[in-house]
Amino acid sequence: MEHEKYFGQIAALATELYNLPPLQDPGSGLVRLQKLARLRRMLDAAEAVTLSDSVELVAQVVAENSCADPKTETEQQRRERISANYYGVDPASEQIIRSNFVAEAAVALRESEEKVRGKLFIADGLRHLCTGTLDALAAGEITTKAAGDIVKQAQDLGAADIRRMEHVLLPMAKTASDAAVSQRARRMHDRLNPVSAQERHEAAKESRALTHWSEADGMAALKLRAPAADIISMVNTVKYFARHDVDPGDSRTQGQREADIFRDALLDGWPATGGTPLKTRVALTIPAVETLADPKRALADLEGYGPIPVGTALALAKDAPSMLRVLTDPWTGAAIDVGRQKYRPSQALKDLLRVREVHCCFPGCRRTAETSEIDHVEDWAKGGHTDRSNTKLLCKRHQMLKHALGWQSIYRPDGSVSWRTPHGLVCLELPGSVEVVQNFDHVHDRTPVREVGLNDRVRRVLGWADPPDRIAS
Image 1 (cartoon, rainbow, N blue to C red):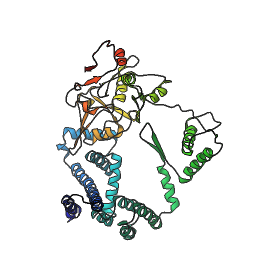
Image 2: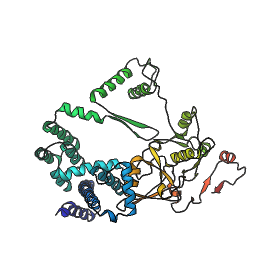
Image 3: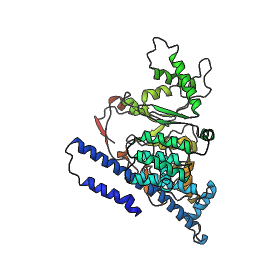
Image 4: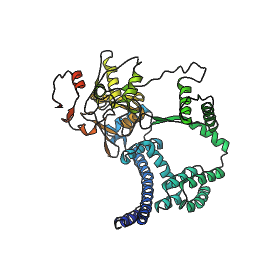
């Protein structure tokens, strides 16, 4: 019956859409869009059920394995047990089971672990708390956003209050906007919640944090989560200074002035102060040949962000206290080696991995090289060497997954790593420095032959006096 409820309706609607004739008019197109939206909601409900049920099955399997006879323990299981003791984790704990499953599901869905963790949170809420909301979503009657908002507001309510919330919200959610459902769900939660608003606020203050993310064209965004009173005070202060004492010749917009004041306050110090004692630290990769070939279109790489105009990079680098020479593959962009004139081999290896990998090499992870550590592809205990062909960068958390929770990795000659999850999914991770994937050879330790055009300036730098217009490399 459950299979029919969650998958039979999907099959019926998909068949109906498949058998529809070609579009004849805009009206029929809008009706078809409604059906497609309903199908997508049904799929989201089926995905939620699959996520929630799968993690329970994993927990069941782990519990059964923990009861097995120790005498039948394999060598791989013995090593994982020792690694689990080293990392101080219990593979049978609910938290570790969920964390490991989220990493596997992220590979299956090709999404970030953070996004899958959020999906699993909503999935468990639909499966075990808001069953009426799950049924409405499975029928395609409400949106996935509305279902998620109901689940979020139901987390700390009793069963009777959850049923009351669904009784009020689900009928309106079938036609109302997502914003209206979200607002009403939050208001109902505040009225029904037995915990006082002050107690909830004190608990919420523990989640204060500063985060950022990359945006296009060399820009990024900053997000500060803090008590509302503090945020409003900061915003009002910045707006006040941006509105007053404005130079008549200042052509900046109000938004630009506010952004500049906020930036100056953090980096240069508030007016009449000596500025911040912290020094700006950035890591840049500037491609020499590209810069010489076409400096207007060349792109450098800013660690933690990605490509930025080479002119911006050169301006940042002009006062750099030190430089590190990096040899890169000209066709893929992958880092091959680093200069060693001033560094011990171990330091050179660290430098190479930092510019070659850019970030943690676990599938989907983007923790920076600075927050990751050197990890052996073939374990040191099994004879693996500490060299560039047997080392990768992994953050602490994903080192634990690899060594203690059944993940396997195979190093390939071109620098990529083939990962196998505990339940058999396989995916390939490329070094973060690789830019041209089409020319990255996953089988042989080389890159394919390719014709490349070079201008006279680059030829002179490379020492080729009179080469042909196009060369093969």
